[in-house]
Image 1 (cartoon, rainbow, N blue to C red):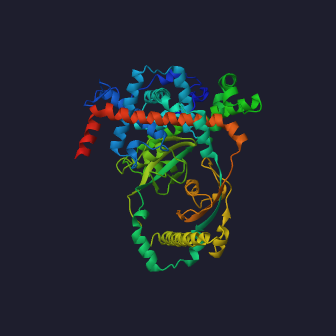
Image 2 (cartoon, helix red, strand yellow):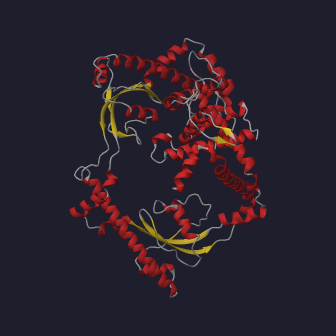
Length: 555
């Protein structure tokens, strides 16, 4: 779901082309539908709530799901990830169809103002705290390469808002959390525990590891799958750095009514987009910088297009043509180190579009169209393709040796931790303190800061264990007792729960109202999910996908 919706100005959505402004509503109402979305692909898609699902309905929901998945998986597309099966994707598409139909039944509608606001929030969210990405760039670099259009984005946002309203309507029974119940829930979440811990870290056992060629070879043989390199690619590229075009952009814009545009932008958006500017002059300076950079990026794109067209026209078609022509023009052609589709090139922060285009290059078609990035425009050519392979032990001997030592040391730490649990349990049963039991085992007890189930971070813990592991051990162990040994990636720990601390009643009075509201929202989501499970089991029985699932289960 989209988070809390806030009003968002549209000035960052300007399309700088002769310094004209295109309104969001007009922009969102244009553009083609997703590939196949307006066409007539045929097939039986079943019925939901008695209504036949058309091919257009399914394609629209599929396009929406693509955007939904992209926003929740760090920029991955559902058909390009191994963590999502085609069956899972089809199931989720039908869920979207069901929710869309239910919203129509209930008369839920989303007006244009809410849609514009949601779009602004969407761009802010995908920017992850940095300056919001402009719509033109998002469409060109993210959606268009996947055959998605601005209309698909509009449908996605509209349905996300509809689902929010569905949750409020259908999840209403879950919101009935009484103040008394909320008070008890608050106590459970905020009551702190005082505890000591003994950590067993691999680093303390490295000196005890016996490293021999035979042991390393055996470790490598047992772990070969871990060392498999994915498909990788190398590309040659010419970078048209946006900063090289800034001076010319300033000169050209100075010939226009540029200052009038800056003043107009400041009057309309200065109070919102540049609220942190100390003076009007500072805000206007930042507006100029944005417009200069956008104009410079447009000029870099034109130069890259001209360069690419010239390279593409050279016959015979060879990847080397890029470097050859770059040298003739006094430009620098660079080559990346091999990179995977997951990580991208190490030399610069490439977009998903750049990586995708790189992996689509072939010896017969070694060139890609220019790719626009934040720092400029890139024209690339295939340098080499490296298929998935497992390096030999000789090639990665240092890495394997390190991994073996760390793995063996972690196992020694876990053994020591398990032994400590048993010896400490016996000593506590005879009346010894936890500290005395630890010292007698040559371990160092550590007093942890008080923490509760609601604690979100505990810096003192470091990377020795996860906070959830610590909470699980603490709140499943009675005060005055020790937890069983908890293994971790680095080794493990044993926890001694000293006592549960009294609540801060003053703090509780201050926070209880907000906590109760959060608890009600969580219950709303739980109630909605229960409704959805029952509804899907009933209403999706008449779809071919769910019939196929039932048939497979029966077999």
